Figure (cartoon, rainbow, N blue to C red):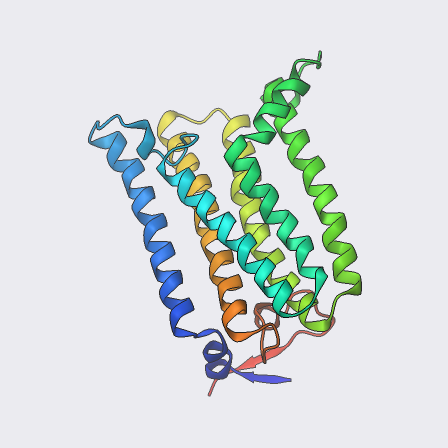
Length: 243
């Protein structure tokens, strides 16, 4: 099936959603710039650093995850579909985990009962945190997969789209995090990796908030979805043509 690029783009170009995305990304960029200015101008305010727990950027993330959860509940009620609550659980967990530092605190409890040399240069604390993250991911994935199996065609496509954004979140939040922890980079490279890691998480969350807000506005039944454009998760890739 051939898709006009113009038609495809227009299906996502809802004015208020586009404005929201611009505002969200602008906020992310400002926090990233603050991190660099904090270092190079010797402001020395840890609250301006994207890596600081409960810093300004962290509260910005809390708001995003909270709004994503609320919008998904609204979408679920609007469509009389319980399947969207599986995604609500995912983002409620991300919100609670960030707010109460669940994987850090439970990771500490686990680390206190471990007695071995951690691989890849990790500390036992980091092993504990990673274990909590992976365990939570498996449990949440089970709920999403069950919903995906019994959900509508639209829900499945929306789930694919959200999953793609979560892959980005996972890449920045877990993969890059492990990279800068396990490899002994010099300070400048490690600092840049940390900024990319947390900045990437912020941008990923902004994209997810934009997407669910777009769903709330235009409805879940649409001509096109992001997964159509990328040709992912399909047996036959969709052909995209330009006019």
